[in-house]
Length: 163
Image (tube, rainbow, N blue to C red):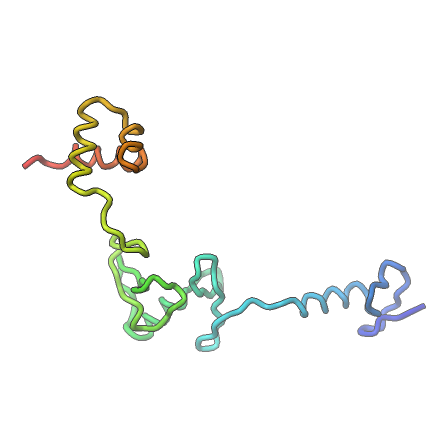
């Protein structure tokens, strides 16, 4: 009867004998330890792992802390309510302090920093099309937008005071 080379337990069953001379328990533990580890960034003894969105974050004690927020708070103090830390160049893995800025919530621009799709000509066109009784979905197809955006813009236009 063979014994496990690691813990000395008897390998009585044939299914316990794999390609190694270890029992199931030792072989499973060895496989887990040999598994590739996720890359991380270490800051002040805390490991920050990359999330799906690209941010480096630490999940500890049920709370998530992102590295760029920690770096900002170390340099400038706590973030005031109604604000957040954003990356200037849109590269979420670039945590240099000169790439981070404090912004008000609701003022976050997309990474491309594209201008508004509502040019004055487009606004006049959807207003005239809506005045003709054309549905919002057909207006969206004509101007290359979505029905939700067209409906929202028309609602906001209706609520705006006329000069």
